[in-house]
Length: 121
Image 1: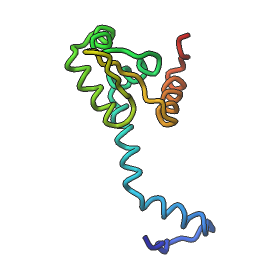
Image 2: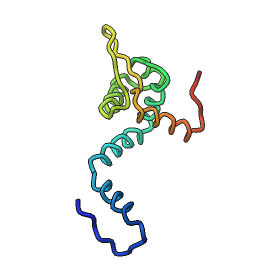
Image 3: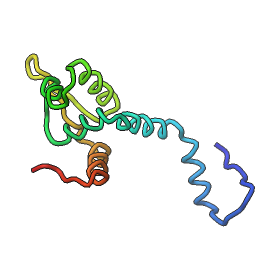
Image 4: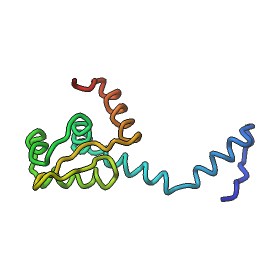
């Protein structure tokens, strides 16, 4: 991308060129936007927060959330597709937990800071 000549020069120079270069990378912004779309849903946000603290199966999550298993499975698929949760199979049972990534850990901290709660022991 070529650096655009701006109507006003506010003395930002090289830094402005770097910012413009980053703004052109719309794919990276789309990834972040997709993650926030997932956490923009209260149900998925609650599921994600729960799975930051424990590993659970769909049936237990459904019972805790007072929802049907298919509804929970739908939300888990969206969270998994966006890399926020991971799953592992033990026999016929599938267990879910928050992904152990810097991004997932940071989102967990942000959620708890915004909600002004702390992790259960």
